Length: 466
Image 1 (cartoon, rainbow, N blue to C red):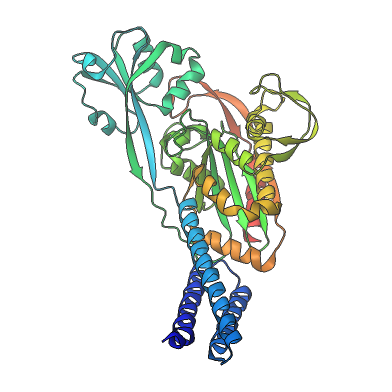
Image 2 (cartoon, rainbow, N blue to C red):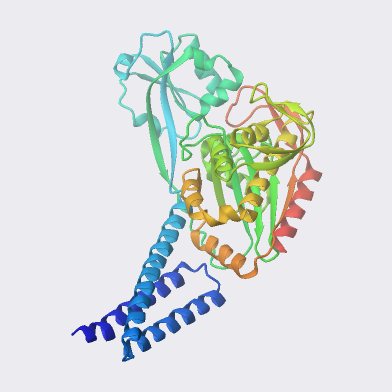
């Protein structure tokens, strides 16, 4: 009976586990074929040797067979566990943008006696009606609802006590604060609720083709990345895996553009984020007359945590300046090593430069390029990529498919090519105009420069088409 166990049971277990491991590695679809075939050959050879050892008549042969079997079992189990873990991490890290949240608040004056919804019974309640009204129906409030088309009039009527409360998309509060600096000292939120919208990207890319990715940086106060908010950073990342080139194209937040599928007044690009990341993505696609395949949305805290996770980044500053966002911090001209907080402050800086927002988008590109280069080139990061990937997945939302990422990784492991990162940005001139989201008040906007746009479009298409 013991001889049967030695000669049959252990080798069979080893063979089964080895086959399962090969299946898991194959399904992972990240290992280049030459390494996959080598792995199969090694596992096959070891299992053949193991069987021959058990068939030997000498005691030493059987002892070596047992030792080798234990090694095969441990190695196979570890490999199965690890490949399954990688698959799980990738499924969490990519195509994780399943829903979008619109947050609403019931707002009253801070010095009022209203503290909960029931206090507003039979009171006058204003709400903003630009695109939809269904959010008002979701709240159980027994008051007189008054429709407003202008957010300024809505807020000023609250200040002047012509209405007792207002219901508003919370993203509009940040817009109002730009005009009314004391906004949050004057109001209080007595009730919040939200609407969830399912997001679905049917754009599945199964080949290693060029793609355009829209990167949106939210300036929201909330840490909930899925919540709609203004897009402070607007960037197109063009990735060409065949030429191993990445092009970053930045658009100023105040660019005066026509919102996708909207008529009438144009708007600041940053305002497009109020209507969802897809609105921002589609608006940028219209502006450049291109197809944008995927999007990534991050918030300010994401930048801090990502940079700290990878151990900081090195960025060259073209001048010495006092940071507006970190009081007392002086950024010297030359190469600097930034932690997360410093990287965020640098990417938000505009007051230190005569060209303001134009220079800010250049800083943002520098920070993103430094993050990409650190991840690609730092071997210590590659060794603990599973830990980093698990942490990263909570810091952004994207509809990029994990299958496409696997193709990129597989190609990189095959060729080990260096990537070239290029940068460009578009410019414009300032003007005071009404906007779609904030009608009735002239706001500072940037009129796109046609020559700048044409150059950017040409460069983008050159990189995309290789």
